[in-house]
Image 1: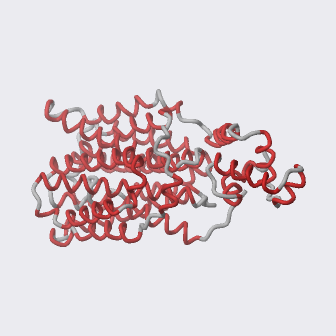
Image 2: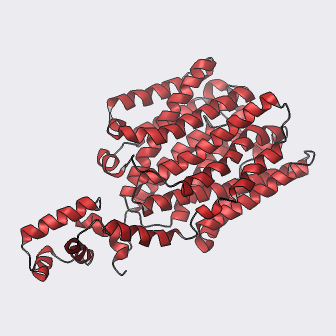
Image 3: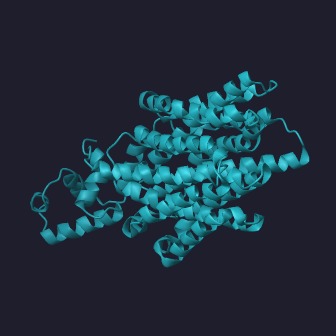
Length: 434
C-alpha cells in the first residue's frame, strides 16, 4: 500500500537531519572550524570525546524519554550553544566540557528526529532521501573546507553556533511521537551492529592518521577533499536502487581497501589524488549504506531506536578507532597507517554474512511474529480492518455486538502499538494481499 504525504514533511525531515549532521562534521567531529581553535592532537582528542558522548547518549538517553522534552534539556541545549560561542577563549578543560554538552545536545536531536521520522510513514525513495541528506551535509562541509582558512577566528565560530541554534529553534519535539515511538528497552541484534562498529574503527584511524598525513598537500586538500564523496553519492543511489543495500556495503569495502593499498607508496601528488578519491568514494558508499540500512531495520521493527542506535554504533566505532590510533602513536611514533586502516576492513569480511541480503524478507517474518500476539478472533478482525471495512459491517459479518467489536479493536491497537484504524492500515497495509 502506498501512502500520500505532503512533500513538506519530507523536506522538513531532510533539512533537520542534514542540519544536525552538517553542524557535527563542520565543527565538533574533526571539522575544519574546530581546526581553527586547536592543534592537531587536541582537535583529535576533542573530536573523539564528542563522538563518544554522542554515541553513548544515543544508547542511554531513551531511558529518560519523558525528560527529553523537559525544561532541563532546554537548559542543557542553551548551555551547549553558549559554550560553543565562547569556545575559542576556553582552555582544554572547558573545551572538553563543550564537547560533552554538544554531544548530548545532538544525541537528543537525533533521537527525537528518528521518532518523528518513523511516525510519519513516508512514501518515498529512501535511497534518494538519505543520499540527499548526505549531499547537503557534505556540500556544507566542502564549503567550509574551502572557506575556513580565510575566516577570522572571531567570526568562524558563529557558523556552528548558528547551526546549533537553528536546530534548537526548528526541531520542536513532538511529545506524543517521542513518548509512543521510542522503545528504549529494545536490544538491537548484534548481527546488525557489530559489522558496522568494526568497519568504522577504520574510519577513526582514517581521521586520526591518514587524513593528517596527506594534509600537507594543503591546496589540493582544501579544494579536492570532499569532492569525490559528493560525486559518488549519485552512484551510491543508483547502486542501492538496482542492487540493494548490501551492494553499497561491498562497494564501500572494496574502495576503502584499495585506498589503503596505495598508501604504502611514498606520498606524492599522484597517489594523494588516488588515495583521496578512493577514500572519499568508499566512505560515500559506506555512509549511504549505514543510513539506509538503519532506516530499513527501524521500519521493519517499527522502532526508531534501531535507527538512532545504528547511527550511534558507526560513530562509536569512529571514536574508538581514533582513540586507538592516538594511544598507539604514544607507544609507536610511526605506526603503519595503511595496515592499521586495512585491518578492520579485512576483519569485517568475516562478519558481513551477519547482515541479511534482503531486508524485505525480514518484514514478512517480523509481521507474522507480531500477529502471534493476537487471538484468532482478533486476527479475523485485523484482516477486515485492513480491507477498510466499516465497523457495523465487521460486527454483522462476525455476528458480534458493536461494543464487543470495539473492545476487540482496542485490544488489537494496543498489542500492535498503533492508535487507531488509520494507523493500523498505514503500518500493516502491505500485508493486505499476503
